[in-house]
Length: 131
Image (cartoon, rainbow, N blue to C red; front, side, top):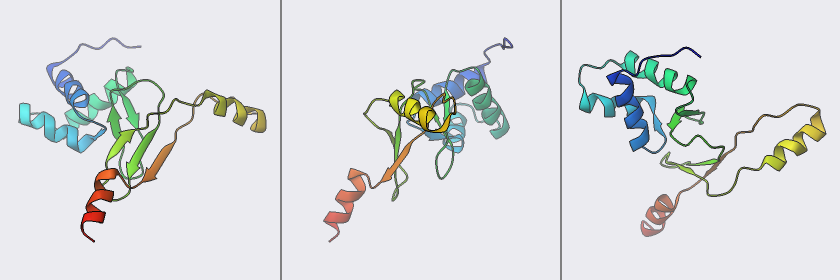
């Protein structure tokens, strides 16, 4: 792996990922701009890519737009189909499912990605109070 120096801009991007829950690149850009109004969108996107490549953060593929996560362990996500909120699912990653798929298909499975979709408690509560 190529050794890269840790720039101030990369540190700002990393800190923004740490302080947000599953933020999109645009959300991270806005957050970083609040601290440094000279930083460009390209610089933020480039540094997100470098942080993912170096294994410091994860890029999470979501139905609407990719998000960035500071949690590096394998885990599942859930997205609200009304407001778009993304949360970690508090259940363990199922390694056994990887083995079952290997047995059925002959593939060698490294990992799987699962995104649950539903309506979050906040949206459910708003909906029930508006009735």
